[in-house]
Image (cartoon, rainbow, N blue to C red; front, side, top):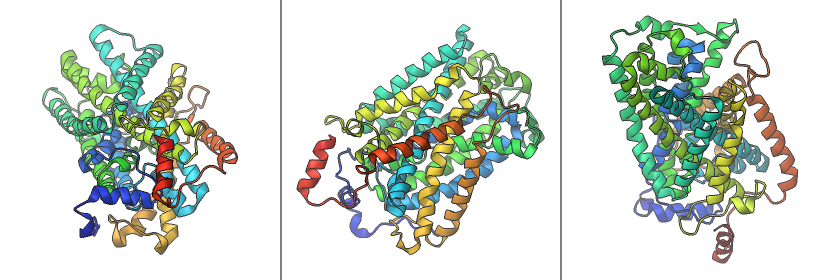
Length: 509
């Protein structure tokens, strides 16, 4: 495959200056601090994908929806398709490196309504991701406290832990993008080293391991549905949920040096590194299962914690859980950064109620402070049903997937529809652009339908998939608000003189 990632030689000496000029050409006055390098940009998407968050928190879900065979082969297959989505999205990112990301791309390539609905879907997915990641971290924290001190991880106590984690992430994000970048860089090595340690210990310490036949072919159906194909399709949620959030590289592009190239590279690298490391992690966990039914019904409420306890004992499990929880905290912090930039950008174009407040940026840290607080507040509300329903967490993760995944495909589809009218950036796929783009669009269409379907049978008030309700609610809200805000909402073409740009910046900061 010939993929170009070169930039004209004239741009190499001063990428900072050129990116600021490019942003002005796209219509925006720079107000965010461009303090993130290429590794930091890759790191934020890798941290948001977070195999130690997604794989671990939905492992119990995977044990019932297809079991080991679907978890392992589903991961391999989903990862390949997601890589196609990521490469196609990276190509559009190179042409439009702005914090608005997906909705700005859709607006430019398809018009205002395309941008509007893409933005609302993207926002739903990002806020659902914060809720899913941080609630997952709360579940694991509860499991650790149960292991050490006999703490009872009730829904109420888990919610309290969840709110404390949200508060921590809000505060960390208020210190500016430089701290976020440093934490994400640490996160990369923490994740990779953490996977290596966990898998190595699980391979060496337990005296008994599952057979390769069990790990790669065992099918388990605990959903209540009889059709194995349906069950396996639902089971793909584990992988697809984990492979979400790589648009973080685009949302932080206005704070990244040479973003036209580095943000595109950040997306692709984050996916393929996560793909390899995640497969190793899932295989290591599954080989180490000592009692399948006992793991599913763990008193900790977290099946991977039970695997660690059975295989390593209390002390070993505690050490491994600390590795996982730290990784999940890194992940949630990165997701708050990405979501807050989306809130900022969408408000900058007057798309949200109260946009004048949410687009304000701190003059000291150059961080969108109100947007950070709004992001964690909405995430807290999305997790409230977990107080009343055991299946609500699966719905929160599905909200993330069905919100953000279609938003990935819309700019890719519009780029394909535009044909030669699309002016590609310095990073592109060359002759592979169309085939990879169409694979991406078709895959997203399939999974968007899958994760609206009921996950367990019989379908009751407690077991229904509330992701469909969340999707309808956000589309209704977007449609109603369109008629209110359509006169004020717009992405700029290109601002005129320096005086106009200064006036715009003064209204934001």
